[in-house]
Image (cartoon, rainbow, N blue to C red):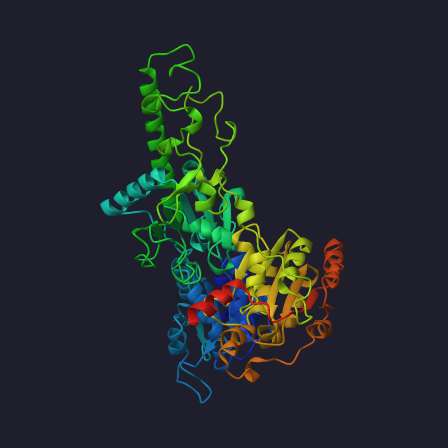
Length: 638
């Protein structure tokens, strides 16, 4: 006869295929049922925090909800930091835990419901008669609100017989949030009008846009409006046309790209919370930029937002595409009508060849660029003085382009020279460039910039990058491009925690079984989570790489507080041989002191994944090279 724990396991496995955890008294019967009665795959980790981190990373990498599990008491309290991260990052998962018996707490029990509530997670407790239904409700809650939930099995209930597992309905997931009401519709009209009239339109998208599946609609909107695009750190790759994308905004962004963003006259933000890092501490946009935001949050999330629509990013983007396209078609129809009324001269509707029609009939075509007729290649600088466009806006070409580049074709309206979209007038690729760095820093240790650049050249293209937290996060975010938002995840940054890197590898490896999973971690976080080094090596095997940025310090603290004159002893770490750590659990460890030492990565990438070992690169880097985003934080904090 199935037990209560089996009811939970069998129901959970109908919707979740990956479970991560550590076995203990409180979840023994649940894990027995998972292993013997379901097709769900259980992967053991060595610390309970790793159970939640792995489930978190699994969702970020695949979009499929996963579960973690631990025992009660000490096992549960070990999960709290990771649980808080999942809450703040809006990652749905189910944490199945043991709990105190229904008769009351024992000396080693704690108030788990209160602890979970303190970090923002709701607890559902199963009983003998409702275990299956409660499990479905927990999953539904997690998916609906994009949060982790705790599913508790009281100790004296876990092994009780509960009869046959009753059929349970599937979780109900709400439809994407559509704009509602006259205000929302009016604001969408205003945004569409602003985009059509903008000279320098800009679209910014975050992880919310990716989760909504907005990429295609956003690409179409960018093409219709001629907008440059960029993303938050968690939304990189959401726009399909990378040749017009400025990369990541904020401290991870290239300086010239961020200067271009500041020249935008209209900016529309989709599914990005506009936190202090994305907004460069309030300096991402210039004071004159009209900023609109579309998000499922109840209200705008930054004071610089001037217009807000509460809606799903995809739904709103599609609405804007419809509005902009319809307005453009109407405008084109009126233009053709106006041209038909102009008497045709020998060279066409406008008379002499090379002259435009309508109001601009007396202006040579090569000087007619939309509303800026007669001022092509010039713009107003900060003082209001007319200057060459390249001086006013970084990356902007000042030379007039040939007609083919202007988009004029044989099918264009005769005599009409359309305005050249902003995104076609700037050197996007050049603006995204970062400093190359030196082979070695002045202190004789590896320059992390040159190391990051060289690693990017050698990494497999199918990579999924998982990042721990710390000063080093700038290097992967700046130098390692990824194909989509679900191929770069930073578990820990929402809660500003470190030590979640190794178990992130476990979840990502199970979610993306055919991809190469690359961990980027510092030595401080790597040591904090060292219990799950073995888990990462076991789970990813020959499809896993770890890059440890080993500067023998808590780099962020040295940069923020050491530079202020505080005692650096607590900030320093005796240099650890991570390569030896890796070798001890079956990985291949390589100490990297020069760029030439990275050649082993290129060789490894060409080897058969089934026969090669997990590769751990222990980079002995200089702590004197400070990442730009950290310099930004230092400036603000000083």
